[in-house]
Image (cartoon, rainbow, N blue to C red; front, side, top):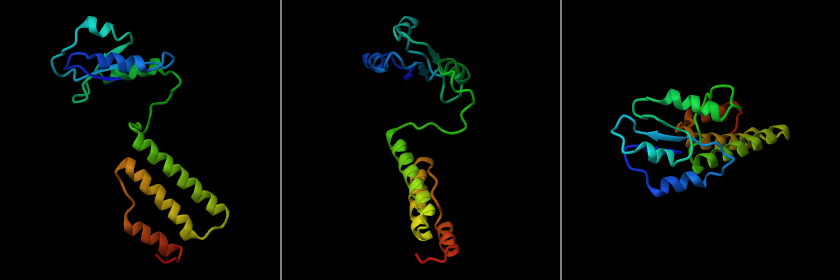
Length: 152
């Protein structure tokens, strides 16, 4: 859980942390360590979990956060190579992309025409673009259509 360290803790901060089930490992990340802290040590001890101070602006403390994450989540042996999914909209887009890719693979194995397969691929690419901010360019789509000799 990320907490703004430049502001005093609110009851909502404690409530949010205590809403996380006990069986789930927790780390309180106190952000904005580059600013004067509004938090006292006794307030932080009331969080009843490990915490670390970081600055998203400068990167200070991220090494300690990484160590805490590795300690709390030891099953992750390799360093992550991608980005985190941070909201429901992104998770939904990834699931839509997955479903469209599955549909495209099924269509290929059932010898569906390439233009029908491409429709599923385009839907998947658009969904992935919602997460990455990158979209498939129209010229690439045109080349794919030309390669399969199908009309738009």
